[in-house]
Image (cartoon, rainbow, N blue to C red; front, side):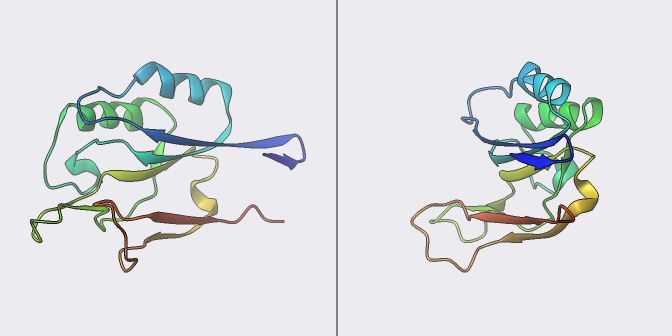
Length: 132
């Protein structure tokens, strides 16, 4: 999106299957080529750093992405995933990651867990104020 003032906002949607390791080079390329970016999706990355109960290889890779590149998670600790037949298993798998240039412009984050969905994932929503 062109925001005027020689500024662009890049928006990415990503699904990463549970058995596929997150591609560090993809995130590195986004970080290098884009100043303002939002990436949302089901990353299947479990790490205690973002409030998950369990951990996996994708979680370890996500920690590396957060720690080494310009990505910040805007999710709070509310779960975005529940196994239907196990009412006690919740996890945070659906994330919004943003560049540091946008972190102070995020005005709201919501997990829409009251929606009647046919998925074991809850939709997530973020609001951003660009000052226009």
